[in-house]
Image 1 (cartoon, rainbow, N blue to C red):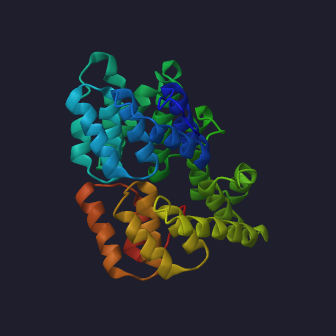
Image 2: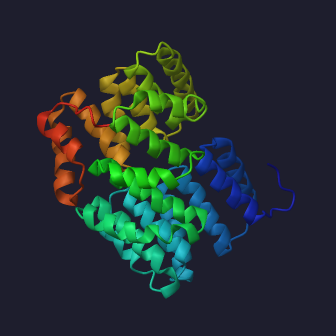
Length: 333
C-alpha cells in the first residue's frame, strides 16, 4: 500500500483489521498497518485504529497508551473503554479491566457493560454467575451487530469448555458461525476436549493456511495416527522459521504449542513462560500448564496454581491435572 495523500479511508482500514482478525490473515493486518504508517491523521478515529493494529500485533503496552490518549480527550469513548478492558483482561489485570467496564454508564451501552463484566467474572471465580448473565443476553444476540454477538458467543464457548457444559456448548455452536477463525478455534477446542478427533479433522482439514487452526488439526491427526500429521508439523516448522527470521514475538502461544506437539518439551516450556508474561487467557494458562507438567517443573506448576488461587480461575479438569502432575485427557492442547 502506498499513499500519495498521507490520508487513509478509515472504513477500509477498519475492514482490513476486522478481516485480519476473523480470517487470521496477516496480509490484511500488514496492509492496514501500512495505511496507518502513511497517515499523519491524529483524530480519535485514527488513534483507535492504530490501537487496534497494535493490539493485533500483541504490542499491548503501546496500544494501552494510545487508548489512554483517547480517553483523556473523551472519557466516555465506548470503543476505547471496551478495548482497554479487553487488553487488561488478556494480561490478567482483572480489577483494572472491571474498572473500565464499569465506566460504560450510558443506558444504551448496558449490553456491553454486562458482557464486559461477565467475561471478567468467567476468569475470577464467578463462572456460574457469568453463565447466567450470558444466558440472559443470548436472547438479545440476534438483534446485535455481528461483532458483538460473536464476542458473546466466544465467551460462552470458553465457559462451556472449562465447565464441560455440553448443553451450553450445543446452544452456542448451533448459532455460532463456522467460517471465521475465532469461531473455528472455539469449536475445535470443544471437540478436542470431548475426544472427537475425527470431527476436528473434518472441520479443519481445509484450513491449513491458518496457523492456529493448523495446530489444532495436527493435534487431532496425532491422536488419529494420521500420517499427514508429520507433513503438517513440517509445514508449521517452516512458518515458525519465517517468524524467527522476522524476529516476531506475536506468536509465542503458537510456538509453544508447536514445540509440545513436536515433543520439544524444554523449548515449549521456555516459550510458554515467555508468553505467560504477556497473555493469561484460557489458552495461555492451558499451554503453560501442559508444558510445565510435561517438563515436571514444580516451580512453574506452583506459579500456575497460585494464579488460580489468587484469581479464582475455574477449570476443574486443568486443576486436577496440575494436582496430579499428569495431563487429563479432557484438556485440549
